[in-house]
Image 1 (cartoon, rainbow, N blue to C red):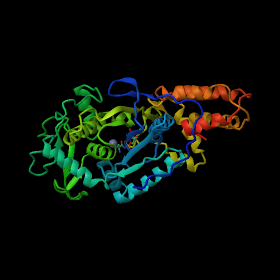
Image 2: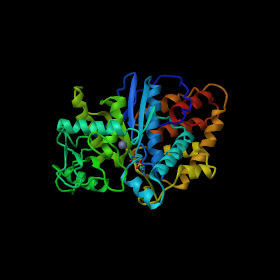
Image 3: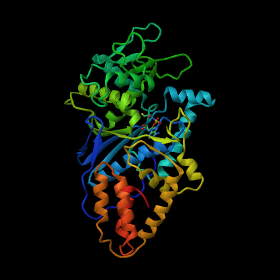
Image 4: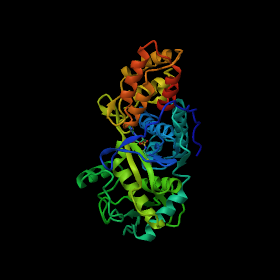
Length: 408
Ligand code: 5CA
Ligand code: ZN
């Protein structure tokens, strides 16, 4: 699919600082170690109710990763999917009496416009599940042939499941215990109670055609894929099966990233690539809430980036407001965040226009803060202190804030 336009990214004077990030798989902050081309896969939207501020906050966190890696001298090969066929999308299309394809296309276009307005660097490959159908079914077929997957012994619906024992390390990514995994599986699209599976946590790879549901022709019969295999195939086929980072919100830690990592590792084993963890870092953003609850499609307590834009809010104010909390903390959206960000941005813009040299070292302070697990709170504090000193020049700092925080 078409991605969205790339905003200009200036170079920053001074010395880059290597990025460290929290890794959900090790439960600690660790240095990232990309080569000349850093490889990042961030799970994309399921295209309805886009783009709420929870989505925006998550994509912003990985936009900072992208910007810091570039500052560190790497190119970034960034891949993102759109889950443009899935049960929740079909349910929403039915509820609203629209064609699911039209709903997806319209919501993906809105998402592109929001990402552009928020100055989020686009993925090099923006891939819909529907357009990737052949490669996804080929991946399922390969897993089935290898014995890592099996057909359910169900005469009516012989769906294909992944055997979570195939990689010998299922569970390492989340570190969750069995009871937690079972609970999240049931809550987040899995079917731990379905009879006939080898293990309750085995995830669906291929759903054979049901009457009235969309289905695709494939070597394993007509049907449509499970959720996790889409991301494993789309990421692995473009970035390889050993990538620098897989990202998303914390609600994707399990089952989605655990299962997509297991699928990717089982696929990697088939290619003879030395087996290791799929991603060096599994990094997750905290949940944005509203009025005491997680902002979610199912609750319907959503604030949309586009609604704020249409009401005349400067997208840079939205961006700064979302960056004013740490990406990993669960936090609440309030209108006060917008008010504070608007005042701060006005102060910063006046300071950016000041002539003369900076001399305060603020650019390095910002670099250090961001390199330390994206500490935007410390970075913003340092810029506030700099802006308050009327004797300091603005041009260098403006360039750094544009390149590293994406704010102009
Ligand atoms: N299409 C799948 C991933 S393959 C999906 O999770 N789509 S989504 O539209 O539900 O979410 C898109 C991204 O936004 C995910 O990374 C998800 O973790 C994140 N997200 C959803 N709600 C919130 C929230 N309230 N706060 C922060 N991030 C959120
Ligand atoms: Zn995904």
